[in-house]
Length: 196
Image (cartoon, rainbow, N blue to C red; front, side, top):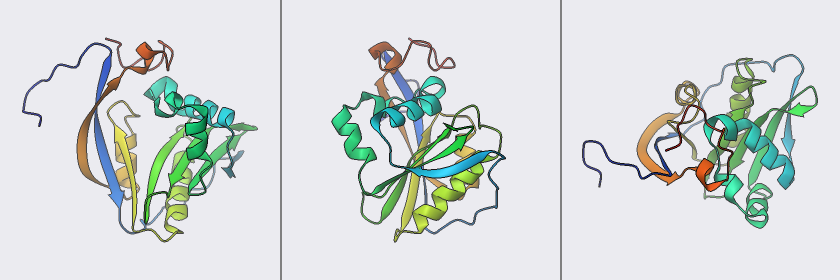
């Protein structure tokens, strides 16, 4: 159990505060049209496609690394599972977003990954994608939709989830290897988070 005060984080590790959020009934959504030239589509991903979009959406700025640590077989098992649904937003023929919904646990849905590349941030595309996440999740027979975010994610993420109808219910401190030191991500990733 953590006590009040400061706690040293070993060199080579990252520590983040994770906020867990949930909704137990479908939240109302605000109509948001797709930006001009942007289309939404469901994807049956290949490993190369998934790793590329995962990296472009989350690895460089937000240090997403979890899925990049997995073997081909481990990643294939998740992304091609019949209870995992993946969507993207496409602009000028290039996929620029990742929405991953995971229905593998009971009557719940985890909003496992949600993000846009810098080419779509600020265009309103995030609201469209969240509307799709909520409507698709609740089109299934679920009792709970949940997501988590952390202090090295986009500064807008937590409030965006709350505005979308999620309610925070728990916090945790996560400590893990810095993926830039282990070589999972390049040393230039996460320029707002120093390597120690």
